[in-house]
Image (cartoon, rainbow, N blue to C red):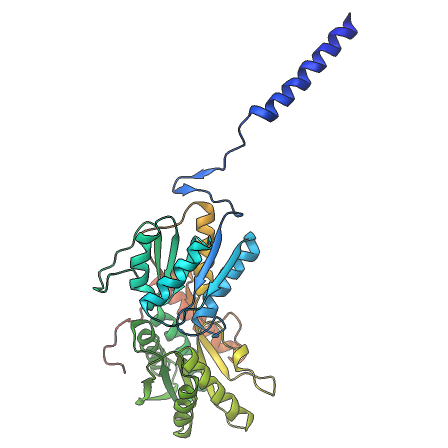
Length: 369
């Protein structure tokens, strides 16, 4: 009797297990107070490039590298599209192509996307958009950031300051110049910060770095590589020792000119922008003409927004600023062409920015344009 009772209990237990497998609901994903956690297998991340290519060694590339870091860490499918032009219609077309292909999280780098994102944030309410260096508006500069959009800005003046300080401290004496792409606020702030960094070194560390207004210029585009090379050649011929090039493809032209001169035995330098451009400056000796770079951690900001979406904490409707206080800007962690003493002084300035004892202006004031 005990044997039959034991057998009956085992059979009932097995039936109970089968019942659980058929009827019990699957475990739900944990929800965050700001939104639902997104299944990594469901998130597909797209990017539309701004003027230039995905490997521009600058803004587009830095953004795409952030997307790729997230793709590796989270196993995401990614895709980028390069528009045939740089009009609002061109951008909207490629954004629509990504949405149609199921890429519902889209990163757009550059202020030229502002009116396009203003349009698509309503056209595709189920998609999420990250707009770097701009905010959506209808052409009237009145920001309208919907819940499916986050706008990201950087304190370029702080980054430019650190690069200018490093340049002045490393050179000790000489002359510097600046080549900008389009004369827009992010590029202008790089220039103003750079000038303040040089002046700070001259006033506090007895450096003797000369800056002349004629050597602080804007080419007007971010694509004209040949023009960048010509502008850099003219400056170097006038005795400029280092050029801060915040100009995308135009800056690549300046880098090419510096590499050619360094290979011929001249000592000239370029200060890179947006990303660490050291590798782009390597020439035939194995050395690089990139003295340092004024960096915006675009890759980190992009990565953080993707991770926030996965975590259910996407900061939709917000305008975020990445600065020294949250480690959003700086110079590269490794600077082979800077002396350790220079790096130490730049680090001190960075910490002073963080605690508020060193404030860099984001306005032109008496500085060159």
